[in-house]
Image 1 (cartoon, rainbow, N blue to C red):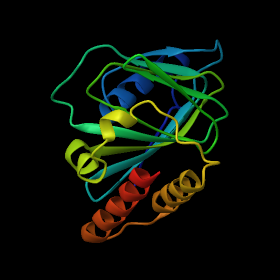
Image 2 (image 1 turned 180 degrees about the vertical axis):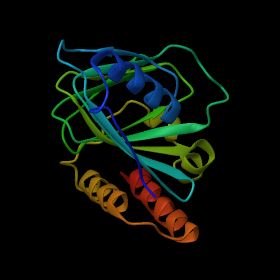
Image 3 (image 1 turned 90 degrees about the vertical axis):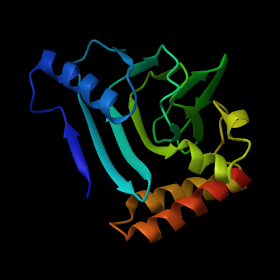
Image 4 (image 1 turned 180 degrees about the horizontal axis):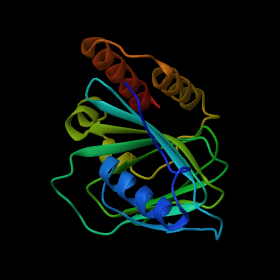
Length: 188
């Protein structure tokens, strides 16, 4: 079952405050900064497939910053950009994504995600142990762009989109799809 978190029915001040609460409870506590003077608007759609939480997040230009290290956070984020420009900075490395590109970052470490032309991405919150079971080099892949023009990058993008669009499945089938997706990402 998907859960939608729209902001359009709220007042101007309440929209951004509500958005901050929703984003922090869905992903990780962050400081959020609008990158435009326009009235804020955003939409978050969340669903679970096995042990992985999938979401599509859309908003006007915004930046999210996680300051502190949180060793209790047990997820990696895999982000498929659907927007013209996105930046993720972690561990002193900045990656830039265009439409169709993928990046992995660690929810336990400080990071900055910036969407100067507006946010539109599919984000997977993958349990740390699951990702590392399929990508033993996961730590080395942080904040590196997997471009959709690369053959296996295109396969990973396509598979991620198909899995996102999949309706509810039994947990065992969801876990098998998650494992297959992570194996493709590891290969890429």
